[in-house]
Image (cartoon, rainbow, N blue to C red):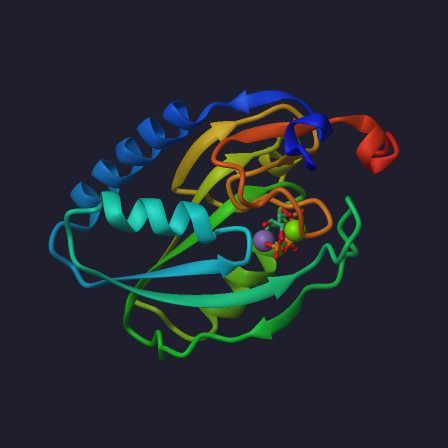
Length: 184
Ligand code: PRP
Ligand code: MN
Ligand code: MG
């Protein structure tokens, strides 16, 4: 059997802490939007898990739409080029939009996405990111909801991949350097 555990250096955020944080974020989102129609925009593919759990933890009815963008390809470093692989189906003009992301690393994906969505004239546009790395703190992206600030390690699981693998782990773990050749 192939054991995913053999590729991991350790567990950074266990499942119960992830779920507790998501319930906390959901309560804040519920309070902040207080009855307004909200559209959650999940960023495929990484945000699938946080989107599914956050949406189910909310008490307010929301709509969900998805956008697929990719900037990483199969590497561990951002290529610097953001591509739209799938656009929204919803017209977000005059709507309250909350982008749901798994992680902000360099901030490149989100800063591109924010200006792209802002140009469609939503009523409001905010970001919820489960994880944020140190580099992202230096970018001028205004992130309304952040789950965890994490160290600059290569993390996988709970939606996050390395070369399309490890997304299905129910927790966030750090990848053993031998798997990616030691280059973070
Ligand atoms: C990852 C992650 C974020 C983005 C963060 O997506 O899910 O969307 O990179 O990195 P950044 O802040 O440096 O831009 P990726 O492009 O790997 O696509 P995926 O979600 O399909 O894995
Ligand atoms: Mn992503
Ligand atoms: Mg990826």
